[in-house]
Length: 198
Image 1 (cartoon, helix red, strand yellow):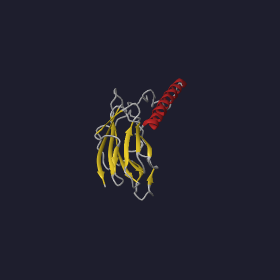
Image 2 (cartoon, helix red, strand yellow):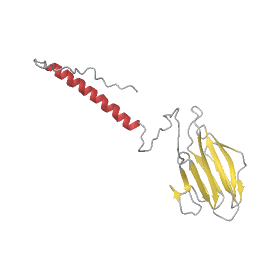
Image 3 (cartoon, one colour):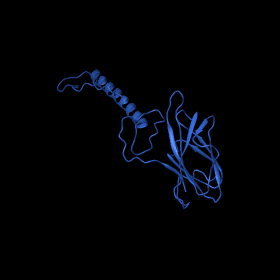
Image 4 (cartoon, helix red, strand yellow):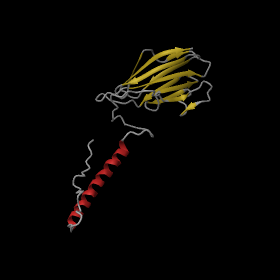
């Protein structure tokens, strides 16, 4: 954005030394200075409200774009149990059996400990048919029981496409990795079983 601060109306040669100067010149200069400072204040306030910062959370609200950037050493956020000793968590647990809700944008990688057959409700995907925008994350499911259990996925007002049939049956020792994504605001949600580890 080009600054709208107009400093050219400020007469830097006024007042002229050694002569009687008209007071109107002073008033004109003060008026031009005030207008320039008012414009500067407005532009600086706008920058403070909308510019990206290195000290806080930058929420572009799916409006602003970062284009042609070289990304280095970026990390993904994790939500859920981060240790199989059940002691370490990041921002609480994703779920512990039964019904689990996952809202896109709260993390990039979810870890879910389950003790029984579980239904995952998926929501919050970005984009729409008119403005496609891909939202994708990974879900790790690991058991905390000795029984066989099933896993299912659902999404409100959405069609779910998957490379496996639901409910998906898994043994008690099988850790699963799922990729979940949508490009049209959750109108269609895709669920893919990446791998199963014992």
